[in-house]
Image 1 (tube, rainbow, N blue to C red):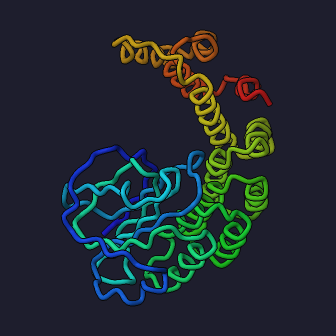
Image 2: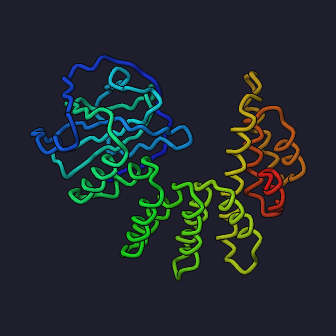
Image 3: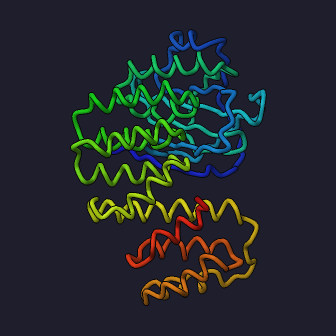
Length: 318
């Protein structure tokens, strides 16, 4: 069965959990679990406010919601969640989220390990990867621990050993998820390699995920470099516009009209894009009081070849 990966904002929906919850004393007790179809979860003392919530799943069969609020010692901590599918070597769901954000899960026994130190949790995930059929599913959990140097070193070795473009593409994605300058410079190193065009384009996406000022400057410089492939420059510009859009949203999140005509106004912005009316889109992107329209205008400006990269650079204030 094909596996899917998505970045999601998990919605809040509360329901009664009818299956018994077994509390484990430590990760060592994992070996004593006799079930082959079960959930495993624990609390990690890291703040995921500035990180995405990851959701890696195979399929959903039942509408069953699970709340961890009563188990957590601190509502600001992260919850790491695994769903084992008929075997301890096969995982059909991986999730990291904060209390109050819920996923849709099938009914299975839950083994709760409680609050764990970052070091012991990281070691457990690394050890677990050695036993899984598809260990790349746990990449998201490595990033959540915010042990950037160790995780980057791990991905670098994996990239060097990867024997397929698909594997390399996944690793570029996760390197980009490490928000450090060292990770961005590793993307530089990969970009200088003799790799396929599709991987170079993936590096542009990874720069945008990195979100450091260094990575944003790299997108700007690549967008302007005539010596770089046109398709790569186009991707750099696209993801630069995407990064600007995120910045605008976070900076002006309260500036939103409450009217019901958003769809009409977004359609008008799209019409301006079709007419390649750069000046009108630029005015909306910089002056609209509705942050949603600013984002939409910036998105479409990123699709217009004539839009100067300097425009996005100015919005980033670099």
